[in-house]
Length: 209
Ligand SMILES: Nc1ncnc2c1ncn2[C@@H]1O[C@H](COP(=O)(O)OP(=O)(O)OP(=O)(O)O)[C@@H](O)[C@H]1O
Ligand SMILES: O=P(O)(O)OC[C@H]1O[C@H](OP(=O)(O)OP(=O)(O)O)[C@H](O)[C@@H]1O
Image 1: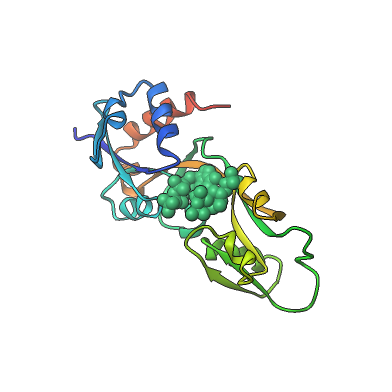
Image 2: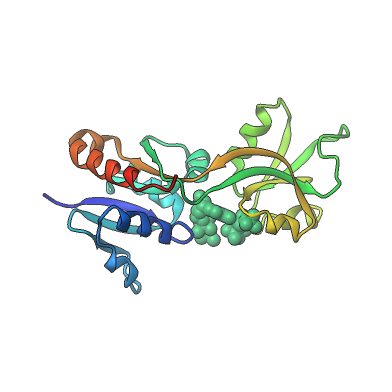
């Protein structure tokens, strides 16, 4: 039987993913000693693919990967046709609306401008409030936008709050909680149900509380 292929998000989620798989009894030595390789064996039943977060979903939806580990932030922004089967309880942070300290974000009558790396999440949040805002997509260091006068506020991920604090911004309102999720391609879940459920159960048993 060929190994199940799992797409892992490179970067922040990488070490926690490897730690969890190790706790579940899978040999992750290749991940620790990967050099520049992007496809690596994990135990003898898994093949790990290291990809950018959004690409994890692309590979999964096209059926070239069976499983994926990706942040709920990316799932909320991208959506897609797949099953989310497990909250992995790491990569914990949250979406928040933030604005310059002391600003009355909801005050005044003028239209508001929001800068964000997550335009769909931001639009949905303000639609839920029946508020018509202008959304500008920014690729990173989103906190810059209100400081430079481009936006009234941002919708971004907040973990420790240090980036907001050190740049004179504050949380106006939390938007959603975020953590890493295990996702599965729909056809794989049908065709390799037993193996996938077995892996999910092994991971679930070793999750942080
Ligand atoms: N403080 C945080 N900031 C951003 N993402 C976080 C944070 N804490 C946990 N995460 C999770 O880690 C995932 C990967 O983040 P990471 O910054 O490594 O990649 P990225 O967002 O694609 O950024 P880059 O473009 O810099 O690679 C996010 O999608 C999110 O689910
Ligand atoms: O609350 P904190 O612990 O300060 O973490 C939140 C910050 O981390 C992320 O940025 P990242 O470092 O990924 O850089 P980026 O802005 O270029 O995406 C996020 O976009 C915030 O800026």
